[in-house]
Image (tube, rainbow, N blue to C red):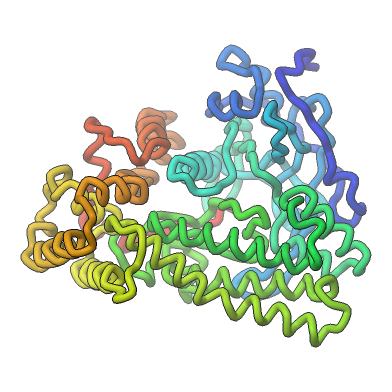
Length: 490
């Protein structure tokens, strides 16, 4: 029993919802937990007074071996469309400990991932591999550094046990922190398997928790749909900004709060190609880089379908109302994407003649034809290639584009230093390069060598800062991604 509270302030509002929405369950005991990673900066944000001297406490709490004061652990029920096919799901290898209230009165979920079987595990073992949990820790912290809404990783604790996948792996538990784990798939579960009264109760809860400002509007359910649409649009535009490919945009992996989570078969695009897919299970490219806007739209239509009974008592009228909202999504997304892209080349607005948009589209065509790196191209532009010295940016075709860009800046009355400041805010210098992520994970999991992992974590946690000692991180092996695949972890 750990006597010190260390700053925990748990509430359990989700446990007060109708019992069909969850199942009380406890993490399974592991025999030799050992702290591998602990996010001290995040712990401080949460108001926790834990440090490296508390390794034994950290190992016990974040393995699930010792209950944290105030926690009321449960597994959440949800459903989802996985690759377009609807199925009943639920937390099969994750347990929500409760909701921690930070010193700034922010409510966050504290969840253990890989903590054993739950009533929703089906045939799964409820466990997670050390490799997949290290990967989630690294990528989620990189996304946070990129200023993209995301789950955070508080700790990784090795379980001391083996996990059986395609090979035998060391097991681990990750502590995930999010605004909540409520998904589009949670609404699908309520709509398909529970009654309208529960749907109303649950929707009220979500609005109270995440969007209280819409509580007293004329049609709160409609406003919820519109708000989540905006959140999802902004999120995916941000993904496109940095070349992030989620890899498994099922409705059960899309957060109502608009946060990125479930870092399974995700990766970052290197060579620019909208058809890029890294997920081993996405054989048809459903979740390819360039398809992500369309899938976000599709997922939102699933959410809209769940809210129909609350939007209007007449189903036909409800459908008419939500279709109007959904039909506006593609054009709104395109507008947001275009603004984001012209910012990447130093413009804040798109002129009536759309010359900025024509310019960025020409650059994207050039990148695809030349197989240029998406991230490095914008850095080369910002630094006149001095920071990279890659031959591809000495090509006459690129220099001609640069001349057009410079001429347009002058024509629009934009000072080059102002344009560069806009670009620096929108173009990361570093992303988690796939070959480096794999090398870091191999070193950690096969040789217990975490040097590269910590170096990479340092760089991607501050992706807009120059790290002269790590400039090699921007270099790519020849055909780096030609056979690269990522895996789900289950």
